[in-house]
Length: 227
Image (cartoon, rainbow, N blue to C red; front, side, top):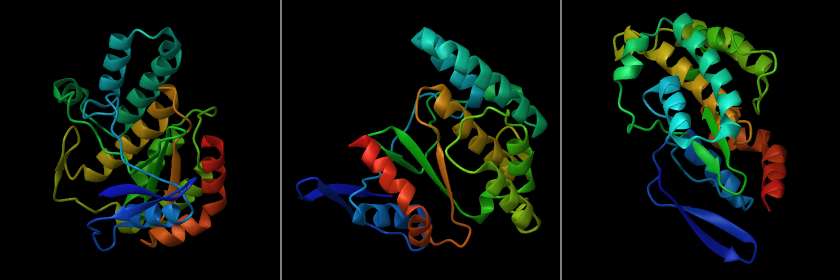
């Protein structure tokens, strides 16, 4: 996804799209947001990498920021439990690359808010397992119950996606378990690292522009907080 930001008038910016891949839900969402003057770009984080919660813990130890110790320690414990329940091989995380950063969909830079626009393959029984392991006081920027219901509604169609493919740490057919773990990593690690709660937007119909319209009020409120 290539987003180029250009100002058109004082206080207003739009994103010009260079090469648009048909069906790119995240890009369509960003385009719709840009029409409202909300610039959503891409960014990577050293604490969100192939090593998962092992990498998260490593980065925080290097930073030596006392404010991160308690929230990240709790996050690592929670993510460890989720990884184990999804039958991940912990030895693989330790052997993985710390410099292979995992992508995030969109970031609202003025507030540091990460926004994920989830298509139907994200809603599986494995994702439901992860969501049900979230602690009662988890801080997320989306409706957990709504996402759980979508998992129940879609899992019969999505659980088998990628069943012939191997996923690192999850073996053959583990693509959807890996996806569920990475989503949990994003959800739980993001606020632990001092960012606002991660926002998830469901776009099971594959229409990013429509997803933006459904969440336009909350996106405008986000923009207001960052101004």
